[in-house]
Length: 499
Image (cartoon, rainbow, N blue to C red; front, side, top):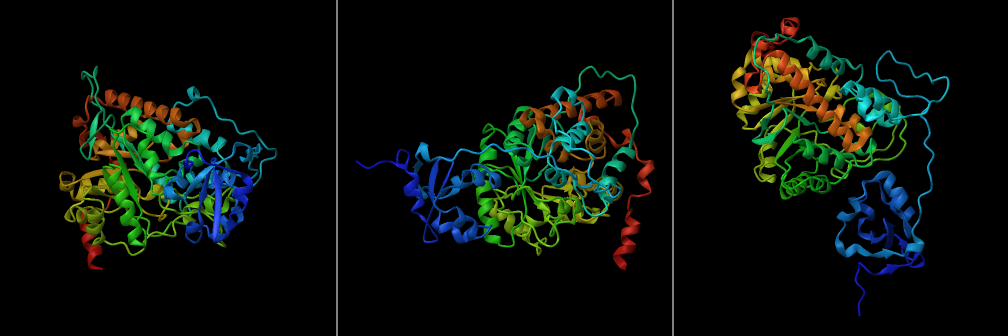
């Protein structure tokens, strides 16, 4: 009688016999795989796998990969289960405190603290706002993780202006209105959302918590909001989608691979998994220079389960963002939208990273369903105008586009009142990125807690503003005079177009 793969046991001695480039087995999570065919395809090079050939590679694998990536190997490559007595037990690891946190602003220095301190995570009931989560994350995440999440391009000008200029838009509250009942539910691309914000795509959430994007997926489902999954997520697209009920909608952020065949295959997977829309990233043909991320030493190699992007180190530094982005197509142009739509099976397309009114008008002409006004959280081109200025630019120069496609915005929005300002100015919804990464210090509970905070702040802001539904959120409810002088007008753009 033949033994099934599920019940076949492989001894350590047997595993050790398969340790060459022509016959390579490894064990991961008690399963023994034949990876001979994959050695030369490994993004990290064949040497990494050959060094582990014929051994239990679980501990090293876990340091780099999400648990489920290896399950994507063909089923006929699964040899069997490693005998219990042969399974390597992870050695206890001592958490070391990073002696020199990377600078996060131009004025911060690299001086080491006088004495090491213990990193502790505050209780969840001590977190009252998104800024609280930022501070808690800074104090509790590793130096490299904090640098990757918080860093922005060069002198942090755009990063700072994103938040500053949102705050300089003032609200004009109306009084003596019945605000006993408030409803802030909305629809994004035809899909119900319990609030006018969504989880913006943010890479490598597993650096903050072992459940990473899985925790965000479950939290989004429980809170009735939508998650836009990053191309550089740390878990596979399938596992993130399957972590939530089948009725939960997801969007997917796409970085187009310079090998278009790989993008076509990825979009096929996106379609099969029932993802509802593609957010095509258009503001990062190359990654911005994020110096804090480059300076902070890597504690481990990380690899995206979806894009295959992998971190490393070179003479420019060890920035996760730059080193994981080598696969991105630098030749992407407007005409590519046609084959992207075809490959996705006709899914709605949103352009992520639009930064001028001219390009929003052009996007409408190309028939996309939406635009996300974004400068990558200040992580791409430093000196690019704040996202809120682009929204004001649309309102000033081409308000008709709000009837032609849906407009979303991110960058500097971390309060319920910030979200309300964007909705008042015509945005359909606001993307929230870094705060959700920071909330993962408490895992899924943290992401849900952040949702509660934002919803509560939005509810309070609407009542104090004198409105009870988002349909009442009109431009007359804000005073933009403090920033209007910074908003590009149509006359200015006509002059520039002639130069």
